[in-house]
Length: 153
Length: 279
Ligand SMILES: Cc1cc2nc3c(=O)[nH]c(=O)nc-3n(C[C@H](O)[C@H](O)[C@H](O)COP(=O)(O)OP(=O)(O)OC[C@H]3O[C@@H](n4cnc5c(N)ncnc54)[C@H](O)[C@@H]3O)c2cc1C
Ligand code: FES
Image (cartoon, rainbow over all chains, first blue to last red; front, side):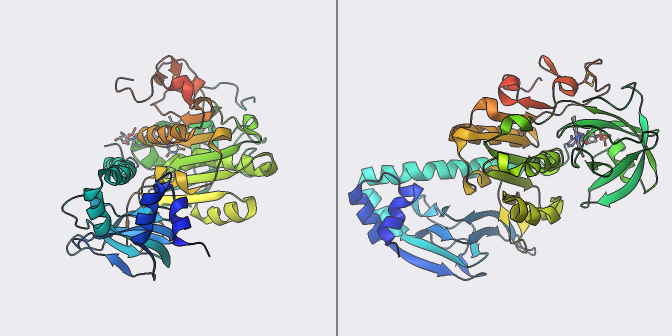
């Protein structure tokens, strides 16, 4: 079985991260598993964790009052779930529910956040890895808002 | 390939052999020529002008296999006057048809390459004949990945074929929708999010993309960022058409006429005009 450290080191998110930071990140990480239907977090929960999905699928849902929950994004193998842990007010924006059995590595975002405050190089490293993910997600939201497949009227 | 009709401006009568309901707003017509006994020669990606008598004529891509196996299959989304009239057709009814017209997916130039096929909404229809052509000579290509995005699960077409495509022809299929309720077990997100989820070697990849222009713009950008060469990316352009043979200028796109020079273009041929508001 692969060690946590080697799984993290091979994940694109942590590619080329200095070894001292890698050791620190590994110290904040543990394996988790969610059954299909299980909530990983709820909207407005404190955002103290983030997840590297190893295998499975997680739906990010919003729940308009009186209506069925709407899935706005799914996150799957090799992808990152959650960036609210590094951005004030550190609150989850969506419900996150496992669509199928999902194995992930959870990182203690609160602990990493504190470390980033103490060591700005680590802060820069993590932010520069998260920003493209946030940017892509914003781009995707814009495309979804444009409703490109709808009628042109 | 030669057209089966002598005058490209005169519609030939075609019988609707089968009307197939695909989704709430999309249907396929299986059409047979009334006066011509031969099957029609066309290439994947080409379109015809379909005439709903007394209402009007619209360009519609061929969505069935080439060469034609039974009838000529076209898949149509109901959006306005003419497509609504076509949606009212019944088995045995007659439509007018001109064509086939336009450029084709350059399948024979794709040998030995990995192929990424990106479809948005009804854009899967003109790509299906290309997929069938790839399947016919499956061993000539490397990885084949179909990335298909639609508005919601109820808008997905041809889903009953995906399993066969994966199991029999070993292609990767990633379907995603822009939005869904929590009953949907599949992926949610724009089609570009599927790109990192499939295996292909960008340096040796040819891409075929068909969908709304904004979807194609983002798809091209992502593929280029990964290292797919511009001259190996093929896209389809859509503009209103009248003559479909390069006479009237209705479909002009920069220096090109989409009906004659397109609808399929190599991306680097049109990139200077692509996404420009005035064109
Ligand atoms: C080369 C080519 C191939 C095509 N292949 C297909 C095909 O295989 N299947 C298919 O369903 N359509 C296809 N189209 C689009 C099709 O031609 C149009 O949807 C059709 O002309 C609309 O005619 P209408 O009279 O029904 O609608 P109109 O009355 O002309 O338009 C009604 C409304 O629909 C909107 N609309 C018009 N065209 C489109 C469009 N392309 N997409 C979204 N909204 C539109 C208009 O803005 C308007 O609001 C193709 C177009 C081209 C140029
Ligand atoms: S439709 Fe007439 S030139 Fe293209």
